Amino acid sequence: MIARRTLLASAGALAAPRLGHAQRGRPLRFVPFADLSMLDPMGTPSSITRDAALMLYDTLFGLDAQLRPQPQMLEGFTTSPDGLRWGLRLREGLRFHDGERVLAKDAAASLRRWGAIDSYGQALFAATEECVADGDRDIVFRLKRPFPRLPDALAKLTGFIPAIMPERHALTPRGQFIRDPIGSGPFRYLAAEGLAGTRYSFEKFAGYVPRPQGTPSFAAGPKHVSLERVEWQIIPDGSTAQNALVAGEIDWWNQVSPDSVAPLKRNRALVVEPCESTGYVGFLQFNHLHPPFNNAAVRQAILGAVDQKDYCIATMGEDPALWRTGLGFFCPGTPLANDAGLAALNTPRSTEKVKQALAAAGYANEKVVVITAGDVGFVRAMGLVTVDLLRRCGMNAELQEMDLATMMGRRMRPQPVSEGGWSVYPIGGVGLQTLDPAVNTYLRGNKGPFGFADSPALEARRADWFDAPDLAAQQRAARALQQQALADLPYVPLGQYLVQTAYRAGIRRGVKEMSVFWDLERS
Image (cartoon, rainbow, N blue to C red):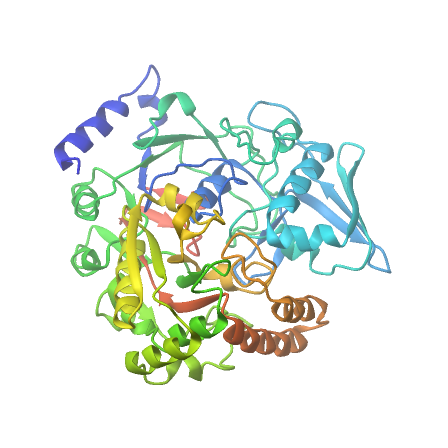
């Protein structure tokens, strides 16, 4: 581990001003919970990449604090009476960081790239005949069937967000990634002033055009920027980040280590509050392709041993104010959250009964590889709980630690354990990721890359939700979907974590639902 003195001295050297830099004011120094290893918003669903993407890129619609989509880059939109044609008109004056105008052809190409990768985008484009530019400012969707949730899809804030980029970037072949991000968002990336794995620099984009009316609300409304520069400092050690924040060497620590919450709250120079309004949620993801978890009976047996409280305490500590159990497949406090079938998670746990169930299911001591990210504290903690749980249930479990980027890549591999594959892994995501079936990429039965689950019944219940005409019908569909998910177990919910963020008291944040750098002032 890098010593604190060495790391901060290095960071200070990197931050040494160029000519004129001092006149632009001291940068706000922000510490994310892990390295920003991917800048392409289509490269990974990581929330770290998402947070950076929201600085660099804008979206056609923005989600407001009531979780409603509002026009963002758009002047407005129209729909035909039969719902088969949507016309989206860009606002005037929008420009990319390279000075080029944002044109409808850029937006259409960006959406097509997103629609090939993202699950919500795939659902939208499955209903789409074509998405094309009609002149410089108009994007047209011609649909095969009505898709009334089109604005919700284009306001998506989790996983792969529908970021608008130049057409030449949007045409990047699948499997290749953008290294020099150019968007039209409120900040631009300063590649020459950063150092991978240590520091990433962003500068206010002078050509950004905020919405002319409304008030900032989550990712909607005008995005006014008062900061000239933001620097992301990568400090993997929690105690180092805590000391740097107290000393004023950094301004904002994105995700506070649980054992640092209490001492930081006692410091009057700091503000400590929830990091995300919907918290984070945990997933225990099975590999459905290979033994033993290709067997539904084995997955059901393990469900009887999972105790959400164990995961909550391991990641957030003993304080129950920092976590919630009783989590189903939809985020607590959001419209689709329900209790259908949750007795399967809330009844007393018994590893002895699980051992019996595993024997009845035919578990034959197959090796179980648990992968986890050793460089992200809460992910590693969940990995340790998982391997201990499986061993107590009599499974031949092995923990393999790696960095987060490697883990995120390895989980996409379909190979068996004998060829470098995996059996199960725990991971966390923002609560918004379980807002509904469209955004929850884990709640699938389409043989997708996050576990490769194959469940036509689960996909049918998901389709029922898409077809539901109103909220009451959507809620009924969500209950049925949760019941089906508890039968098929694409993953096991692991609780809700109320992760805290901490920053200097001189910072005023208007938007607090997530970590953004607009509607923010510093004294």
